[in-house]
Each structure stands twice: as structure tokens, then as C-alpha cells.
Image 1 (cartoon, rainbow, N blue to C red):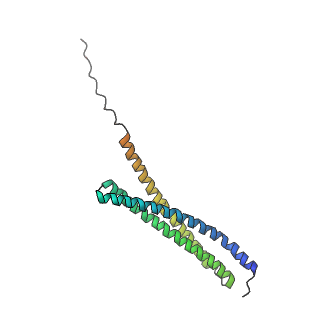
Image 2 (image 1 turned 180 degrees about the horizontal axis):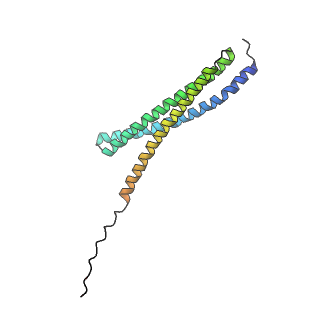
Image 3 (image 1 turned 30 degrees about the horizontal axis):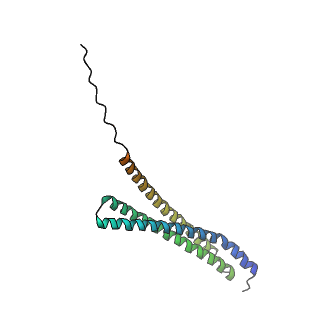
Length: 164
């Protein structure tokens, strides 16, 4: 097996695009884990408050946080699978070129599966954002209802005066 330096350079050039994709996936994982950390922090606060005194509002928020954490966990798992598959693509690019084994179909399949994992991660992430935004809007509306002045009482009908 005689590997030329120009061959290795070509393989490195082919592997650059998946490496950039891997960087994006790693950045996305950072965002997802930070969101999960915030959810966990808020969950701990609510659980401590519920231990002191039961509260229906805290319980419903806690249930929503559990739902959001599950969605973020699925998004993290999908992003991690995507990253793993991209690493496999890079490894197969090198292995296929250095050994001469035709891995083209396997590389393509792994890349397609990586994209499916990335898409599913974005879907779970978007769903979690929708739930968080909806809860925030509901909280805002509840606060605005408490702060708005009561509506004026309806005007009493005036009785016609008799003129004599």
C-alpha cells in the first residue's frame, strides 16, 4: 500500500465539510445542555417550594418543565447521534481512501442518517421552544389580568323624567 501525500491532502479536503458540520452540532449541543440546565435549576426551586406548601400553580409549572426536559433530552440524544455519525463519515472517508475499500454507499448512508438525526434534533428543540413560549405568554396574560383596572360598572339606565 503506497499512500501519496497528495492523496492524504485530498482526503483531508473531503473531510473538512463534515468537520464544520461537527462544529455546528457541538455548538448546538452546548445550547441544548444550557437550556436543560436552566430547566433543572427551575425544577429544583419549584420542588423545594412544593415541599414547603402545596401549590397548584407550581405543580402545573413543574409538569410543564418535565415535559420540556424530555424534549430537550431527545434533542440532545439526536444531536449526539448526528455528531457520532459525522465522525463515522470522517473515519470512513480516511479508511476508504487509504485502504482502497469502496465505502461510498456506507458514507452516503451514514451522512443521510446524520442529517435525519440533525433534523429530528431541531424538531424536538423547536417543540420545546414553542412550549416555553406558550407558557411565557400565558404567564404574561395572567399578570396583565391582575394589573388591569376593573372594568367600569355598566351605566344605569336613566329613567325618563315626567314633565307636567
